[in-house]
Image 1 (cartoon, rainbow, N blue to C red):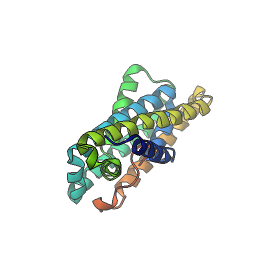
Image 2 (image 1 turned 90 degrees about the vertical axis):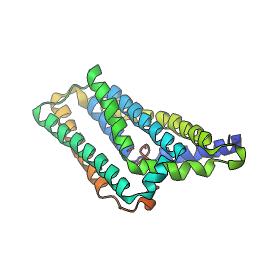
Image 3 (image 1 turned 45 degrees about the vertical axis):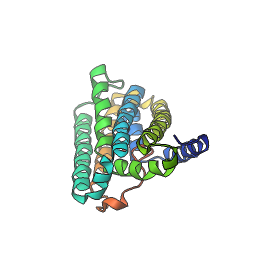
Image 4 (image 1 turned 180 degrees about the vertical axis):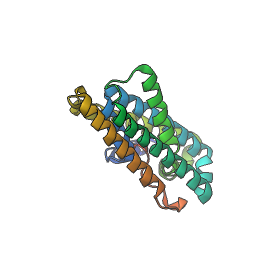
Length: 226
C-alpha cells in the first residue's frame, strides 16, 4: 500500500480537483436547485456509485482498452451525450406541462439515483481520468498495483461524496424560496432542461482523440466532478 505521505499528497491533490466545479457539479447543483436537497444528494450518491465502476475498471485494466480504442471511446461518449440530451428534453417538457414536486417522492429519487449513475458511467473522460491519475500515486515496490488503485479510488470517492454533497446542500438552501412558487419551479425545470442539453452537446462535441481525454472527471468533473 502507498505510505501515509503519499496518501496525504493524493488527498490534497484530489481536494484541489474536486473544489473546482465541473459538469458533474453543474448537474448536481441543477438537480438541487430545481428539486431540492434530496434530489441533489441522491444524484451525488448515484454519480459516485458510477465512480466505483470506473475505479474497478481502472484497477482491472478495462479503462486501458477504452483509452486505446477511439471507436469504443466515441461510442461511449455519444451514448452519454444522448442520455443527457434526453434528460434535457424531458425536463423541458416537464417545465411546459407543470413542474415536478419540489421534493420528489421515493420513486423519483430512485430514478434520479440511477440517472446520476448512468450519466457518470457513460462519461468516458471519467474512465480515462482515473486511468491516468490514480496510478501516479501507486508504488510498485509497495505491493500489487490493483489494490492500491482501489484504495486510492475509494479515497477519491469519499472526498467526492463530501465535496459534491456540500455543493448539493448549498444549492438547495439558496434556492429554497424559489421552489415554493409553482411558476418558479416551472422556470427552474426549463432552466434545468437547457443545462442538461448544454452538457449533452458539450459531451458530444468534445475532442475525438482518446489519448487526449485524461482531463478532470465527473465529479468536480467532467459528469461526472465530479
